[in-house]
Length: 139
Picture 1 (cartoon, one colour):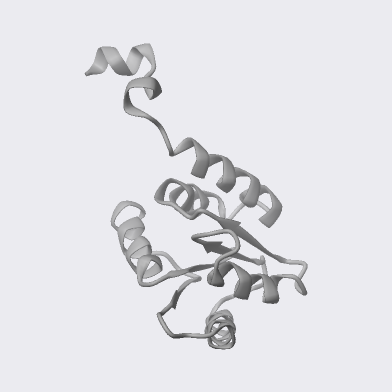
Picture 2 (cartoon, rainbow, N blue to C red):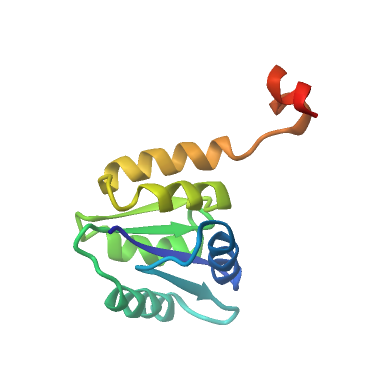
């Protein structure tokens, strides 16, 4: 099973994991990393390395981070750049995470990254413009 590390500013990663498990059930092979005020990049890299030690990395590891170019992304990229079986997706959100849960036992890292990116984007919808005719009729 693909390993996942959710890395965010503050405790968002922990709360996102808790929320996703309310919907999808308890998850294995997943860790959270928080970037706290006053921390430096070296401390964040060390947190990622500690999280990696807890994961089964045989099928690869996907870092799900909040912002492209933010500290959690930058620290993850320092690790992933040297590891062929690791990748990073930014803009982590609940639809993305739930979709990845359902796929991570069967698909490759590359496929999961592609699908995760799409589901993250598709999870952002405007109410009035985002309803199909069938959905409108159900309301």
